[in-house]
Image 1 (tube, rainbow, N blue to C red):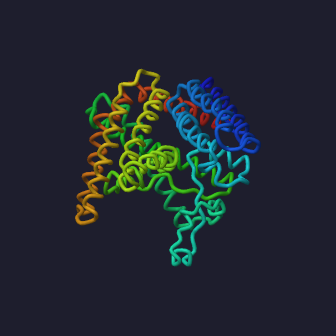
Image 2: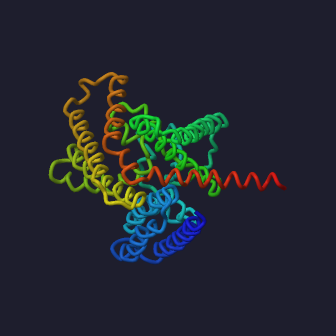
Image 3: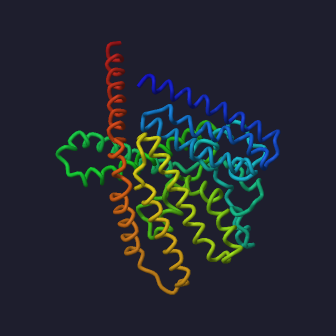
Length: 369
């Protein structure tokens, strides 16, 4: 594990140096094809770097941060778009943080007068509208957030202990625990990242999750509640360009359908890549099937809603149960089994055992003194 930590440090030092280079490129090379040619080597390098890490936690997190988020943001930056280009005077620390971390700076709160005039500042293209804010959350909000994450952290620790008895537990129950384990762990990792960015850079950030278990439709789940950082980066890189292309042929109203499905195609490919970084095994294709299935169903849902035009809809409780049930059932069928197929779970448990042993040895050494 010591060698893995050294590799992890080396990888992130290299990432920082690469992002400093990209920051300098943005100052001297005009946006467009020329800037893209200078940034493409970094994009390729970021695809290679996660291969130096084998821990599911260190390697998986690094792959998500740089091979997916950073690369997509840098591609947007090459053409003067995305979060890295919203403020021409962005500082180097903020540039590197926003580049490779799953964070999105909140836009300034609009004044009531702006809404009364029919203008929503959040939809404005003016860079000044995208500036960071320093409005501290209320003590109650901070307390509720801390309690929420503390409970989820305790539940993760409990589940890790339960896995010790997995030989006596039905495999479907283990899959059910994996589902919540992955969700809790992902939310905790993203929340810790956001908290560090808030502390070190003094900025307020938008939330990464919005209670996905309360979703009332697939559109609600994927677009407004689940892993909003991925949604926010796929929108300008895949969804909007695809919609603009198809708008010329079938009109803007229906161009959203191929744009949505195209977004899920790219998401499927990126998730296959993430699972390769995690497991280093030949892809089974189940991950792609999962996202393509959801892409098809979401496209059909949107088309059906457009056809109904608000004339009828299911009660929220019914649609919520159907939505969460569909996501969970397809996840048990196609998504979560890949963690066992690639033995990602086994290697993750080895990480936990290493951390526990380290903490135990540290506490014993402290007690001796």
